[in-house]
Length: 297
Image 1: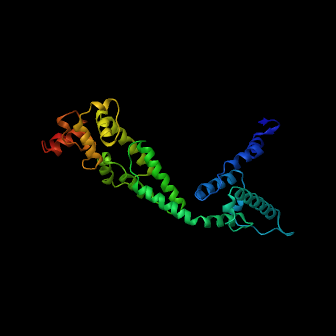
Image 2: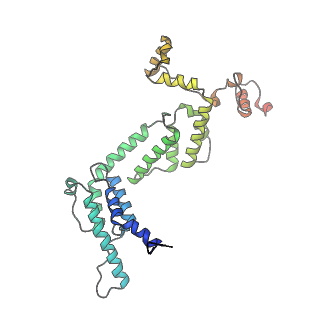
Image 3: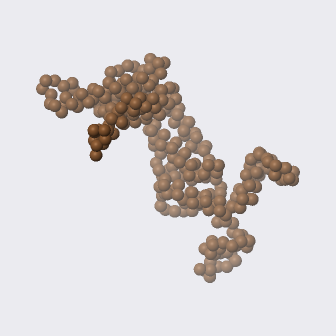
């Protein structure tokens, strides 16, 4: 197939390495400052990789070719030298003047990048401390969905991995489970009793299913009551609420009283008040001691 007198491969090459494309690549690099080293390094690596200029960052400098060097050796050196020269220009051009002056200069791109990392080593440790603190204190509030909550914690774990503080998938899954609220209590108990460990994809799928199940069995009135009790907000409809119920909200906000939705899985008395799936009905009746579970199977 031909386009404008060239084949598709050459045309795509032209689009990727045209002046407009290169200008777009370079403008997308965020200038290195005191807080964005990790992001800056990722952008530099991506841009140089896309432009096929990351050879100097991946391999050590080859020996300069001589008259006795083979054609392959000469080609390897020329490729490295071009990559090294342009990599240095791109890196130095994306660093603010104040920071560039504090970095030891080098004519080797790989070594120059190592010097930059040394300057930001302390910053990386501080960033890791911040990430760990966020992970330990982060709890699922129910505002944006459990999937987003899990992905957010997984992203923080990925950032820690980039700082040489890798968290195993098994530990991360267990850690995320502990960040879920009381409504997921029976779900967490079920997870703890299983011998098999869940992968991250399985955790997301199961948590999303559990959240949908909780929503389906929790009436809107119950959801509204819990929301009203935990949030100091009012509307035109809340002006009709009696003062005694506002006192309850005050007690909740002062942490004297706690209101939590209890799943049907944990409500043994539900067979007395509403219809349940057969298996759950039998389990609850047996747990209450009304009828031996052997006769209900």
